[in-house]
Amino acid sequence: MADYQDTEEPAPADITRNAPLRAPSRRRLPWKRGLFALIALGVVAAAGYYWYLTRDEVSTDDAYTDGRAITIAPQVSGNVITLAVDDNQFVHRGDLLVAIDPRPFRAARDQARGQLELARAQRDNARISLDIAKTTYPARLASAQAAVASAQAAAVKAQSDLRRQRALPPAATTRELLDAAIAADDQAEAAVRQAQAQLAEANLVAQNIAAAETQVKQLDAQVEAAQAALDQAEINLGFTNVTAPQDGWITKRNVELGNFVQPGQQILAIVSPQVWITANFKETQLDRMRPGQKVMIRVDAYPALSLTGHVDSIQKGSGSKFTAFPPENATGNFVKIVQRVPVKIDIDSGLDPQLPLPLGISVEPTVSVR
Image (cartoon, rainbow, N blue to C red; front, side):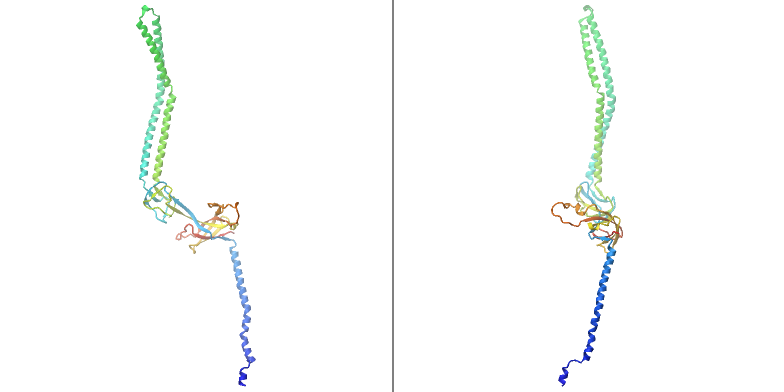
């Protein structure tokens, strides 16, 4: 009997005692579903609220700081004898950057100055000659005219004397007197011809004065050329001191003391303090974008820095249009690609003097297109 009782099934009371262990699991399932639904509803609400807040905002991560980088190059060749700046140094407009050996240029200036003085002396001498010519040539003309009149009068007298000698009877004169009269007449005619020739030469008064004036003009031109050469020599001497054209920071310095530099050789660059943002927005983002709209700017290098600005302008052309080899969509197969258009954004506030913004660092602008 004892063995039979040990193998009996549990009494109903035992089953009832274990039943409450399974009942709570069935009652908790509806609460879990409600919790999941509530979470999903919260996510949808948060997404809708985020969309509502950002529906009037356009942003891009294809944006960089931009500014003016001025390339500095000498305009004369020579050895660098002074290097007055260092890397990343701030300079002001007019500050000396590099000095080139000025001795050859001083010699060229002095030579040009001597050529100018010589040209001026020659020009002054020509002016004096012109003043003399204006008096001398008219006087020579008058003298030649008087000489012609005198020679003609002498010729008339000689002819009269000859006629009288020939009219006398042979007994009243001699052969010697007749020969002398003939010679005097010939001499008087020769004197007239000589005086007339001198008069013809003296008649060129206007031409002689014009020649003197032309000489003065020629020497005036030589003086101007010599003055220009001196001015160029002075300019070249001034070019030996390379100065900063505006305020900014020294960058890309590749010149050292003692280097021989050539005209046009890039020796350094100056980055101006003015910085703006160049953001390359997709063409599909430009529909509501207008100049003057407010922009929030996040800088990757300084996450804690918050900048504000405004849209300055939108470039009149996509970036691909101004590449070295712009696309030719009218030839071959065509695949539509969303283009990007550079937008200039000016920074209004938020800059920290202790946190400089180098050109070309990544930023993320967000434009409010309300």
